[in-house]
Length: 128
Image 1 (tube, rainbow, N blue to C red):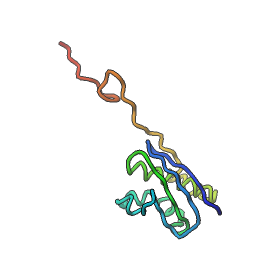
Image 2 (cartoon, rainbow, N blue to C red):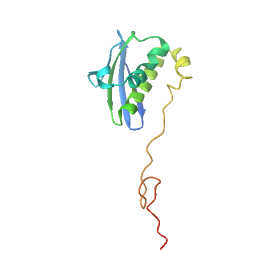
Image 3 (cartoon, helix red, strand yellow):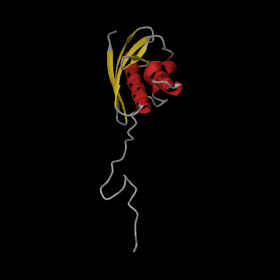
């Protein structure tokens, strides 16, 4: 198996991953996973596809991620890894799809409208 390249997105975060057989190392922007994502919840989000399939030590992942915040970046990486694992073996899809790991979350920040303070909030109304 050669290197598999996939892209995952969440809000404004874009993650490009390169998946190849290895011993389970994950590097994000040339840093260790534990250095880049300091909280255990975010580390779990990134590793979730591997944990569900039981392949934690089977693949090496190299990630380039930019844009958004750290939570959006972690979820973008999770989507990209899930897509790559489905390309490795089509059987993985049946495990990952019910967990919602193959669904692109379309929610984005609503744009600010002119004549208003924010996207939905208006300026204070004065009757007199």
